[in-house]
Length: 239
Image (tube, rainbow, N blue to C red):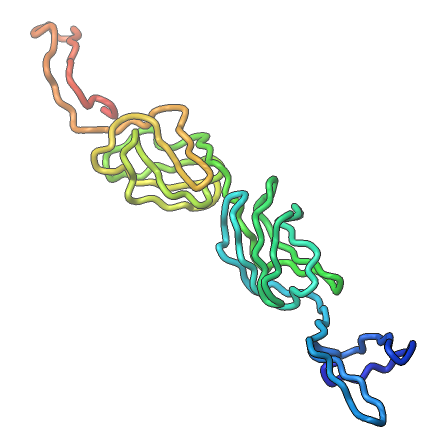
């Protein structure tokens, strides 16, 4: 087998031999030798070895999207799983590459590849992107240029954060459950939204954008010490 001698074989007839794949055999041609000469198979015999996963890309995706695994020993692959959830659609492109579709119900975790010789786990997690949800944010108000921290789920793969539909140009996805966003110029009081490839989420409550106050009127226009007057204007939030 590719130059490695089989120690166990049986000549069943003039037209058939049963041979046991030997230890140390590698993928390649099979040869048969008798006193009259040697014959080589026209095609390779593939020796299935335990797989290894060296990388995958992209590292995060939504359900139904493909990712490409790179490694060794993919010949004969019988199963690919995402954190224990079997992928029903995958293609073994070669002994070193598999294209697999992220299955329904997959969750973030290791990717595994299995063939008759064994199984391999990826060294790092594949992140399954799910629709985000915003559970809270703090502080609940701020001036343009200040930061607020969003808490929720499904923040992996976030592509946009907006304040009442005004896009934040500066934000960082700290983790799958936290985003730090800077209040953008032109932001107004309203809901915060988070968007990723799986969908969008709106905050349940408004974020208040604190703007410079303006007094348009007050009444009454006079009063004794200790009396009250009511001011009317804009931008009084945060006073």
